[in-house]
Image (tube, rainbow, N blue to C red; front, side, top):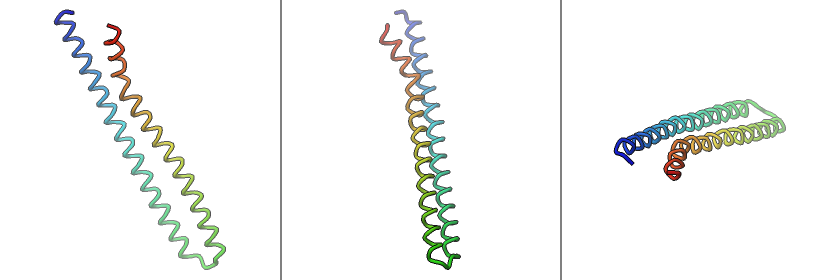
Length: 109
């Protein structure tokens, strides 16, 4: 292998690492945003629940409201957990992709 070929391979490796790092940073930002959005929504929903709860006088209505809130909170949690899980999966797939291609080329040589 010539010096020029070695330099080209090193450059490709560096480009792959940079692409992987950029993808990683973008994915981490998306994950952090998803966590922050969910937390904000959960806090708003909880605040609205307590505001409604304090205005109710009948015990049966309190139980209905609480049941509705718990059901909605659980459904929201499951949906957001699935969304965030998919973001993590995409993070690992996209971050590894440039490096996998580079390793495949290196092992083939």
